[in-house]
Length: 485
Picture 1 (cartoon, rainbow, N blue to C red):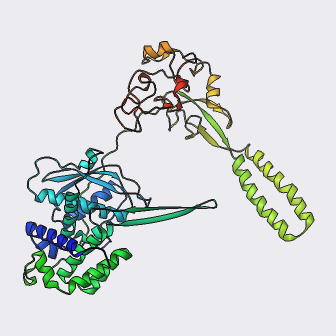
Picture 2 (picture 1 turned 30 degrees about the vertical axis):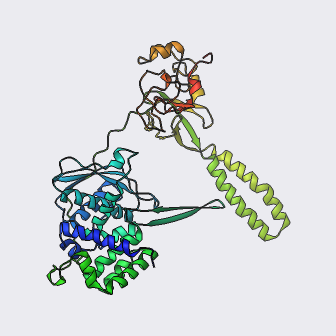
């Protein structure tokens, strides 16, 4: 059935016995077995920070810590990518509340599987005594830190003790796959993910031990089993069958008192949580537009290609109909008329305006717009769909471009670069000597790339291209320097 040997089983039971002796047997025998469904999480869920907070509040309520204030910050994904991973850690904790930091959010069904371990981590911290300083997750404080394997196993065991065993077993091995057709090629993506420090069979064994100790009826066992994958469900059935053969020995191994003294198990579905009015923090104000105040142009758009594409599809259907007719005269006429109609549709569409876009960032522009809402540029005229943005600016005598910039026009220009003629080849911005660039390889402190010859001073990564902080264009590093340099 499984390679989980008798020694490993005895060790798991002994470690759980230690938790039961430490925190009492009531939670192990009476706390609800949390199901990863609407029965266990009846609260409305939204794929954002508020949804993550709601799941954590529910888990802390199950753990008897419902009085804690929960605050969440960070960035959450939309949850539409089924292969995305949920990354959320405890960033701060005291007796009044907990701070969570969300690095990424995956599908809704994965959120409780991840947060079950964080809720167990909070329980352990608070039950270990007064929290003298905020708890920090070392794996996120130091990228090279190695997590304490024994501590992580204790966290997963604590999650099982609290009644989260079904969540732990389901998350011990998560496999998902999806595919799509790209032309004639089938593209398949898949992911294997292990949440927690327990192997799937170890998590199933502890869940089976809890169910057998409680003498769970077959109907509930079948309901729990339906949440697991095929292998986990088979392991759970096998462990339940083996442990049921000598339930008294199991109770003795866990150090549990006689069942007559146990309080009744909580099996009723919970009520939805009361909305306490919490909303995600207000996002920071948007940064200043990269092209604010600089001239841009309206690029006229037409419907030539869209009409030609529609006519092309209709021509295909018309040619198929001509073939079906079987008349050679009709087929010859179709071969001549249909391509002509497609070309005519293109030239007709060129006379139909579709709207304007910004020549710099291609943001759609309203007829009355004087400033581009995308890049903040000042609209100074209009060009055709095939004209060059920079070439059009060259024709405007009052606009400084790469062919005729005056250094004195930029008040913050660094004299070192003014003297040597260093400037952006796209907008003629002269470096101001500030640290605008950061290495994508080491993500160290920002630096001035021109002081280090286009090389990261921290990891010596060499950058062939340089991003302009003003116009947001990427240009080869050598193009920033005059040809004689």
